[in-house]
Length: 262
Image 1 (cartoon, rainbow, N blue to C red):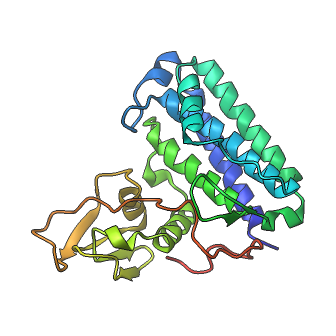
Image 2 (cartoon, one colour):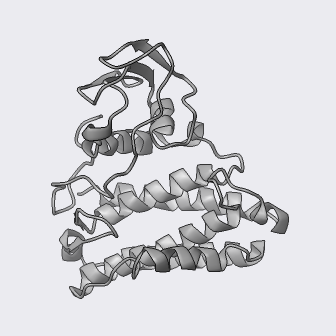
């Protein structure tokens, strides 16, 4: 048994939650601003549909061994999102559902050995194909919040939160850290040596929401000061997702991922 069945179950549930939210949006709701600057909800929904198709490309690469990029280039990715953003709600929902179904079918049909094949996002490092499921869950959960349609970080499943915190630490931008330490609550963990700045404390969901730019830091407090900290103000979070995947992931799907809490 590997982590694949549990990731697939998470993916199916996250997809259903997103489709349920999308089903509540009418034409005016789809064209309303999202929580992402400059993007409507239509931009977010179109991005999620094209993301599913891009990940189908990566799994096709894993299955065939023929390099099939997720997107031709960043400009093509942006153009695809812009082209579909203004569509009516029914078109958006159909595209979202159909693209998710194509990804689900590709996952279902992928041979066991292909999950260990190495693929690449638009940025390094390359990662094994099984991590595509983790990346899709990240897109679904974060952008579901970005719709600003009632789904918030408080709704994030615990498994998602703990995995993303683990990967956030694994990809930490030490050269541009804005805090020296994070004291996590629920579960109790401590991250030290992160950079120059204050020590902050907060619950796991609150910390993840802040680190990913999905909150202004509600529920997080400064508890002491680092070498260059001034006052008690919470700093801006460091750059998030500087890499699409941690380096040195196990090539074969592990039994559990992550093996340890963050």
